[in-house]
Image (cartoon, rainbow, N blue to C red; front, side):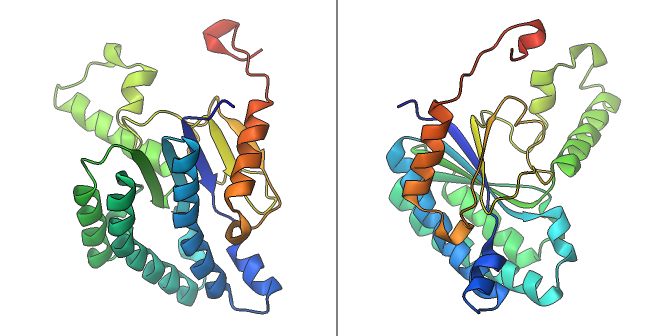
Length: 237
């Protein structure tokens, strides 16, 4: 079986999973957070090298404040426990997104985790946090303009590869496969640039129920796709 090098996942369905069990939405978020570690382990065992998950979008701030507060608490706890996971799995962790809006303590926890895992190279795990792809591209363009104004960048040097170096995912290969759980079939402002040639897999399974077997199903579906490249500018045809 051809194992994709990089898998990206939109973690969806925590609230509906909790509601089906007669529990509050935050119960689903807690279960979803625990499932992230399980899928990291499963992905590593399968030979996937990069895993990127959509944990909190720039649009998620519009949710009820109590839900946002609980999500931030869960993320803070995860940053602490993830150090053990990173060491156990030789896993480097990077956080994508605009971190400036996060609480100072959470920002510090993120920096600590990234520094702690910076030399690990067995598995690469990216967490998109306060992330939106349009926001990412705007921030990238602002940095490029600043470099141009400082004389560090000539417009003639601009290429797709150069632009990618200004994105949050600089140095990370584009995803081969995108998975979205819960049955929704949209990108929700996630990795719009990076997913240009990725395969998409949508499953009705809610995120807390998405396990290693479901991941294997997604990879099997990826293997059944006829990936042909040709025509102008590498377009598929």
